[in-house]
Image 1: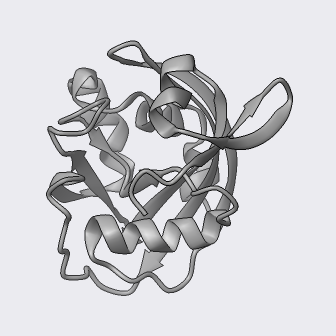
Image 2: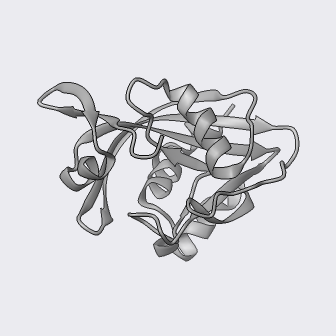
Amino acid sequence: MPGAPIAAWEGGILAPHDKIDVHRRGLRHPAVSVFLTVGEEVLLQRRALGKYHTPGLWANSCCTHPHWRETPEACARRRVREELGVEVGALHPRGTVEYRADVGGGMVEHEVVEVFRAPLDHKPRLAPDPAEVMECRWEPIEGLSVLIDAAPETFTPWLKIYLRDHFSEIFGN
């Protein structure tokens, strides 16, 4: 459903909105983030250059916005399949994170994010959608902060926030 409305709060009311308008106005809105893991590694994706914000930056496995009235879990499954070509089994809720970040181009992400970890028993064959993802790589979970510290400008604001402020909730037992 390209162009499907997403939910956002305006005047204390949750209602359907255009995604681009939500980001231009910096409205608070629901989002979903997924971390695919195999053992002690996590899949990172590099956002396609055609993305309307943060193109070419590294992010977690999948991050998106539920369509209006779509549940976070259904959204997570749908977008992992659409973006990476992977069907996930278990989705482990890892809490809710709220953040506000300037993502460039006059856009602001003010998200209330349902975070999921999707542990896999093996590295799946990926089939990334080139309109969404330009590259993927598996990285050791424990080494992520070193990667980000070495080149912070190459990572999305939300990934830096997740790892700095919520690492143990996302990756702990």
